[in-house]
Structure formats: C-alpha cells, structure tokens
Image (cartoon, rainbow, N blue to C red; front, side, top):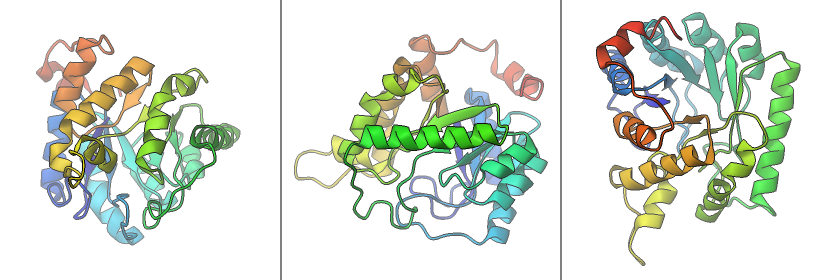
Length: 270
C-alpha cells in the first residue's frame, strides 16, 4: 500500500503532492513501482494535527481518487464517513479510518474496511499514552472493531495495531514483537511504520535529537520486512520501490512481468 497524502502538513511529504496533478502523477509512479493499493488521504493524522473541514478534504481527495481508480485499487484514508462515501462513489474500494467512524459508510458502499487502533485523536494522542498491557488492550480493541464490521456485513476486513497512534516507542516495539500473535488470530493484518517518529528516536545516537523523517528510510524498510516475515497481509509505505524489492527478496511477493503491463492491467484486477 503506497501512501499518497494530498495535504500541506503531513509529517513526511506535506505539500509535495498537495496539487492534484502532482498527486495523480505520484500515484501513477507508485503503481509503476509495484504498489497494489494507493492510500489517498486529505487530512493529516500526524501527532498534533488539526482537523480539516469536510468540504476541503473532499476537494483534496476526490479528483485524485477518480483519476487513479481505473489503474489501481484505491483506499481512502479518512476519519469522516461522508468523505469515505464520496470516495467510494468515485472508485475507492477500501476505507482506512484510524478513528473507526466510517464502518457504516464502508458497509453501505460494499467496500473493505481497515480497523485501526488509536488512543485519543491525532491532536492529543501522543501527549501521555499509557496502557496496563498494550498488546492485550490493542488486540481487544481490534477484536471489537472487527465484530462491529462483521455485524454490518463487511466481508473484507483488515486490522492495524496503529503503530504511532497513541503509543510510546516501547509500546510500538511491543506491538511489532507481537505481530505473529496478531496474524495468528486469522484476520489479515495491515502495518504502517513508514518514516514514523519512533524510528527516528531509535536510530539517533544516545543523547542526540531524533532523526528527521528524511533519515528514517532504513528503519522503515527494516520494520516493513519484519512485518512481512511475521505474516502480515499489507504494509503501508512511502518508499514503494524499495519495499517491493525487499518483498521479492524475502519471497513475500512475486515479480511482475513488466512495469508497463502492470500499469495497463491494474484496472482489470482491482
């Protein structure tokens, strides 16, 4: 799953793809690099992010979803049911909602749904996250979200432990260590660690400032490979080409016949 943030304030690629033409071009680049899904978002969920008005989020994402849906499977990354509904009407077939507010919208659209764990909201989630047992509590919340999605008739469900969404560095590491246990529960798992701040803290020398997002590539790739080895179904990444190459090296995916054939045929096997 390639990350496509159509925002001015995302923590890694804010402003780079805020223009519709730039976003669509980058989406096509990710497809050519091997992305199976492009996750389009118009509201940043970085720690401390402010909410975006619904009409502005719709303005940001709908033209991009509509342009990319014929060539690749599109996921809509939103916390607003109305945005999820509108994006599915334009061709999105998966709803990725960190707040789990759009389950009903996904069900009505016949789309898949990603149940995500987040403690709090993007604005306050990293202020003081605490758990008695982070693995047990996250797994329990995901199980409840899956039960809700199933009751609403959603057949394609993924669970995402929400790395970085209301967690400390140690919480994130405990959840990554527990991925094989989450996979063993039988619901396909999605993991997104790409360029996140805990990687910058882990990689920085003792006493130094955390590495900035631009310097977190190695940690992103390492944790993506760990997730693949643990058996997850989807990794959500900014660096599609490198992650696809790593996936092939570890036998997680098979090589495609050609870039041209992939782009031409992506609309056939959405």
